[in-house]
Image 1 (cartoon, rainbow, N blue to C red):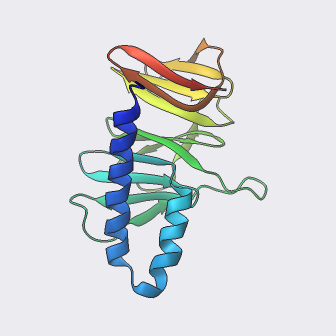
Image 2 (image 1 turned 180 degrees about the horizontal axis):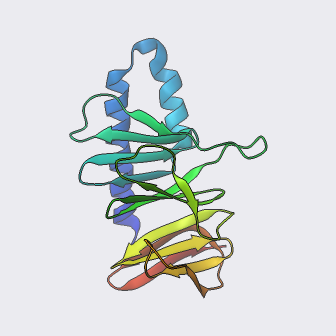
Length: 179
C-alpha cells in the first residue's frame, strides 16, 4: 500500500471543502467559471494556524480561519515569456511562507505585505518542498537540495535525482516521486 495515499485523500478532502466554501460565496453566474478555473488549476494546499493557502495557475489565494469570508488572491506571479508561472508547493517555516513554482523558489515574510522574493539558485520547477525538523528539503528537476538553515545559509545538493511530483517525510523516511 502506498503510504502517501491517506495524505492525498486528506488533501483532496481539504480542497473539496475549500471549493464548496468558495462556491457558496459566488453567485450563480460566476460560480461555474470560477469553479472550473480552480478545479483545473489547483496545485498546492497548505494549512497554517491562521490561514489556508491555495496555490494555483492563477496565483496564491488565502482564506482566513475559520473558513468564512472570501478567498483573497494575494499574489499573482509574473509571467515568463507568455507562460503563466504555476505555484506547485507551499510550506510555512516560522514567519516565512516558502512557495515552490515552475520558475524557482520564493519566500514571503509575514505579515504578507509586498511581493514574495525569489531565493536560492533555483530557476526551474520546484516540485517537492517539505520540512523535516528545521531542514527544508527542495525537490527540483536538477536534484534534491537540503537547506539546513533556510532563514540564512545556502542550500546544498543532497541527491542528483530529478523530482517529478512530490517529496515527503514519513516516519523518518523520505518518499520521492521521480521521472
